[in-house]
Image 1 (cartoon, rainbow, N blue to C red):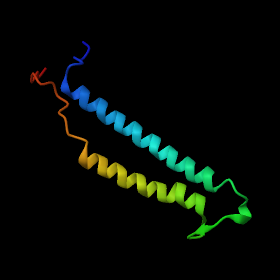
Image 2: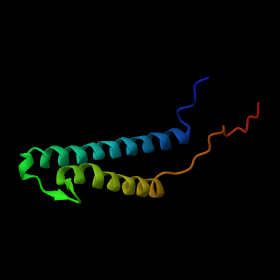
Image 3: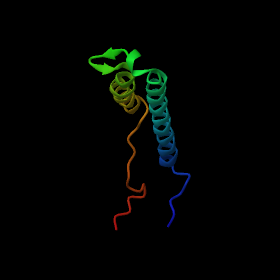
Image 4: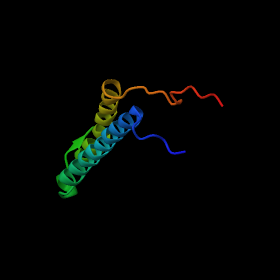
Length: 92
């Protein structure tokens, strides 16, 4: 039996999935922007942060920290807990 698409849980799941896709796109744009924006120059011209090339530090290290904080904020503010059992209380 297919689930009823009018169930409120589908709206919540779709909204949270779109938020997750948005976060993934933001993560890719962050990584791509710093990695190819700053990393496209000659290696002799690189600046370094904590011994790492700046493009790598900002795209991979700082990007990871930013994404962890963003995911935590999104989960705390916009994600809601939904029950997985059917509302009818059908115990088979």
